[in-house]
Length: 78
Image (cartoon, rainbow, N blue to C red; front, side):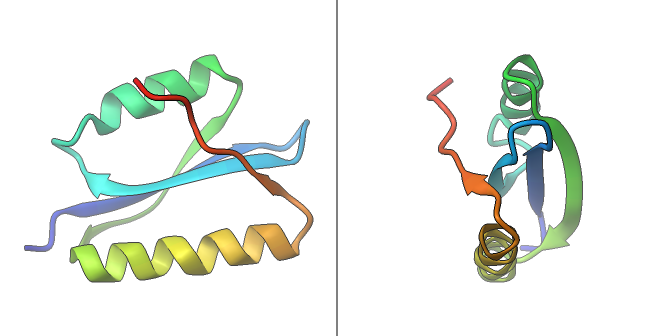
């Protein structure tokens, strides 16, 4: 099904980012709320993707930001 979102969470002040590819029903609003509390700006990159497409896009964006000098941070569990 085409129901996956790709969300980038960016903190330009500290040049850090995190990213997720998940269904909206898979606690996406809670992840976004948590990221905002940690100082990240949420950016919707894509929606209505298949899981495979969303994961592929996530890897591509992760690589691009890492190559641009940003540090990837895993987010803490909800």
